[in-house]
Image 1 (cartoon, one colour):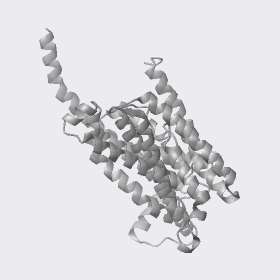
Image 2: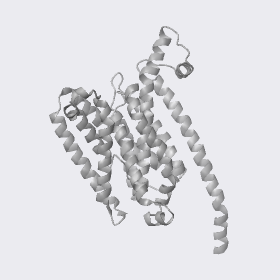
Image 3: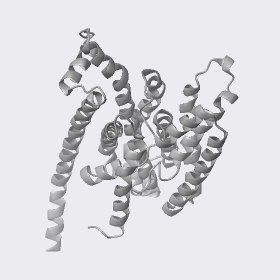
Image 4: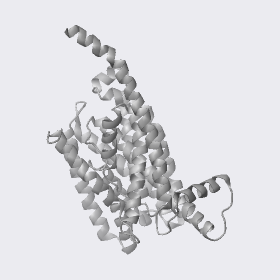
Length: 367
């Protein structure tokens, strides 16, 4: 009887795999539609409300080169294409990058609690961005004609890279990574970065202090086409490179030794993941400040919905992360209008309860 049961399970395995693949394709297609719908709503929401149909028409006119009508038509076109479109595009890129970075870190550490924000990587990138804001004008002579904002992605990338490398070195011994050590080291590194950021705030003038506050709370309010042009190549290259690591991440789930015997260059993959996470988090912090919980909420939800296969998980994370951050931005700028909430507050209000639920579920409090 046991042999017959085993044979039945083997026969059902291909159909179960096919069903999972169909569910993954359906979920990915649904995420594309959701992201498009949320983006159109975001382009029309604000002090100047524009109906979704009008938003689509404006985008079509901009894409085809057709001129907008005079009066209200020209005003709506300016609001959509000049003010809101770069903001939504920045939200899509940053949300996608943070979610994918979370999936990469969870795959590297083989734990769903790993997240760039929780383990201090975002804090390290934010500290480096703060150093660039406060000390950049002193370290880079004005005669060079370098825009201080152009240095922010570089500084934040180096800060995220240094923090990630330090975290991995502390948590890994003998080829094994201790998750408890990783989380504790992340808390310590985040505290150190917070203390150093406090020193920078004490040293800064009024303008620099406002900029530091922006980076610490997160916002898409400063998005412009020029700023998007600086960070988009970094974030875009990161997102395009991550699917290459999908097979290696699937193998790492089995363990580093097993992945090595499957032909995976484990150390090279680790290095690539560290660099990609640092680039994604660094550029995201430079563009929108420190935004937490996107990297832990999105990958875990998608693993529950479509499975752990990184070939599908990574693109789905990019889509859902983008949709979540654009939705959070809509809430941030409409909830207390005409004022605007920092987007980091909104993502924390969504992510913190989810994180607590995840911890309690792992302890058996929920089924």
